[in-house]
Image (tube, rainbow, N blue to C red; front, side):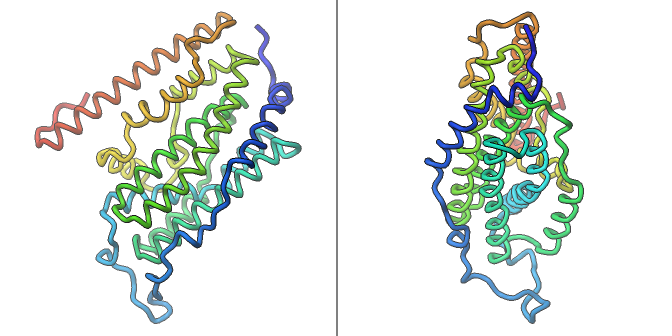
Length: 310
């Protein structure tokens, strides 16, 4: 079966992009970030004659603070994401129009999370700024993903971000933070639907090629926040708290999309497509097993009887 090159795929998927851009614009609700920030709680820091930050000023638990910092710094790296998407999708026509709209919506997220954290003194502002600078200077490189791989990756990534924001909002135990992160998660959900529909259309156009992309991205998925300083340590803390872990990743991110795409019912596959389907089944089984081991070890640790590392 012939594999399509990127220019051909961009043309073949153009009508789907246009249709979903129109649907998105009709569905998305405009919202104003400043209306989600409790400005009345703000006060000057030391440089303006106020009080320097200290840990005791934060009403957030340590793990909620870590999760919010990681979510914020991941959102902060928007310039890299824009560069990668515009390089992959191109700037002209409906593809470029979508990238610009997506970027405009995503730009609200970091600004209002940061405003909330600074106004409420939720995190150390100096450490946060140093981490922001380091994150943006590191940037994020997609590794030159082909078009279909990029569409699959952002489908998983947008859903993962939605889940992470919602669970972080609950962990904050602050109705203002939860309202803010719920609003952001609604944006992420609409973005996920856009990319999910692109992949669905690609499965109809190039089923074997798209299945290979899905199998590859399930196997090698890594959050773009991995460039954040201290990411590994932060990710472990968040996983131990149940905000985002392998079980959640498998059950709430990967499997809903795999089921929606009905990849195991796909027809018209060539030998490469059938192999991709087998590879995907094996990757899902391995991920499920890793998730189960993690949950068991966490339960043992919480019970005070840590088991062996498996």
